[in-house]
Image (tube, rainbow, N blue to C red):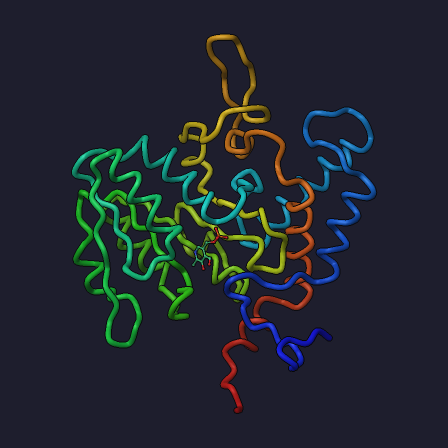
Length: 296
Ligand SMILES: Cc1ncc(COP(=O)(O)O)c(C=O)c1O
């Protein structure tokens, strides 16, 4: 037991980053000690094992959020990178001057600054939903902001500042009715409740591994397969190509198209172990425990 300032340490800063269970540390160690090798490019036994474990981690994440396919899960460095990926690929391709992006005033900077950058490049306009006096999203205002110019609604599932939960399925229904896509920042929901991308109905969902008992340097983007298929690459390099010529290249299908270069292999496998850990406890049990009134 560690002491800080003469007291037993109790760590409560899980919303910023969670501590890592022994099983996650073991998964990292097993990879680095036992089968450290690059993925998708070696034919030797260690590379095959590393590739299998890396892809198994993707499958675990896909099942965890009830994705129809593990091909819809793109590994990123964190949630911020996942949002930037959407902003720079889907955003720069689909947004033009006068289009509107709806955000709330309570977004994490990760879900604000990428859209500021994209709006500067495209001329798309940012529109903001305020909070009610109960410190929840003003849903009536949100509905009123939606119109035929709205191309994207990007908002949190659970707020990192307020703890309030957005009714994502409703927001998706309203946004889709005007033809807009919806991105869900699920950083603070995925570690705390069962999240089902098919039930939510959104187009994109992002989360960070390090907030869900997994390693840092790891996160994921989930996207509807037909939308991911339609998006151009984010970063260029190895892994994301099919054929390379000196003057042009052809690109792999998702998720590889969006995973240029050697990925965070051990960290992905560690995230898979974190998903196993959360599943062993059970997301419904975790949520029930967290919403119990405090007896203090
Ligand atoms: C709601 C929310 N979105 C996005 C992020 C950004 O996560 P990361 O820094 O891992 O990219 C955080 C981190 O605090 C968050 O709480």
